[in-house]
Length: 474
Image 1: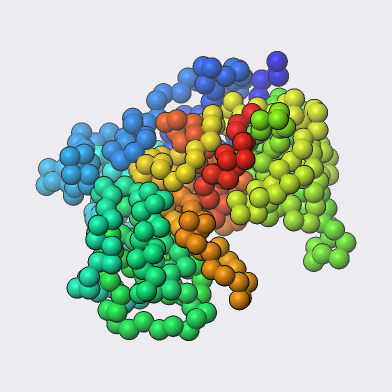
Image 2: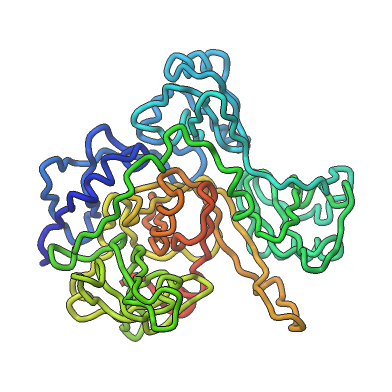
């Protein structure tokens, strides 16, 4: 049995210093979380303690975070929508937070205050909440075009799904086909109460004021018409954080867990030196490792971010100079931004999926886009510590094709999850979190790997292809 995991001073500092990563308890949290049906790894640091339940019903809208002490509930299950606080409830919020402004934007409650609570709650009255400083206003990032016209006919009025939920893959395809004659759509972002359609720019097609339907499948329709995709393009519109992660620790966890205990998801992995002739020949690339998976034939591999190993197939932990060689790249899945690592015997024997630092340990793969909106997930990366994601929608995107090639049918588009990010994920922190599994708090299911984020919205491709190929958690 492996020896207990000891948390390095660097990562202890990382997890205790950030207002976002230390959100679950006033004391320092334990470094590992295990399930009763997995191998137990004993906590050995002096401040370890049993963890209290952190969420009530995190598998959909209406979840309550452990630091949400509001004596009321803003989620109305019968109508599937959040309501605005009453006069009495606003008085309670003012007494608690001395707010200067209070408003809702979509499915987020915004509180403007110079006195944010410590520790930070992620919900208030079960409604997702963020705190912004006096003078700052946060609204949902939205496209700036004026193409939407609610007076035009809905092109697919018979396609319906419940309020605040995701459409099915079949419904998404119906919507895309209905839009074919109206606009050249390259992607569709289905959010809880509206849809953002991304339009092709290379075709030089123009759209007039109010020329496209403002209601599609019964939802408000907005249009993004820029060269950059919607998520990267809204980077400048992300929320002004009252507690700015950029002011937190910049330390990265460089501990060698292979030598002192066991390897787990969330550990640091690093490439070998880049190849001669590349722009930087003396550099390595560090990021976060994913999960150990296996297929029906018994083959076992570790997942790592594909983009971190473009110039070297060698994988080290925690770093090349003085670290250990733990394996080499044997296969890639660029569309998922993951690569497969054949581990050395010592690294393979050491690796366990049964713990994930402070995050919920992964237990299985999710398939498809059916994960409920409002579901809370966790990630723990070597540059971030623990942070939290809330599932808030799905995306369908047209795969890129060379000029002159036939268009790909909607059934073959790329489907993925859209998350709202709560935590320490500003650049360059988020870059080094890539590859970390996104784990559903309620079920332990892995819905994807942290990949693309603008600081507020994160995108993750579904794992359908891996599941179809027969891969599962080892």
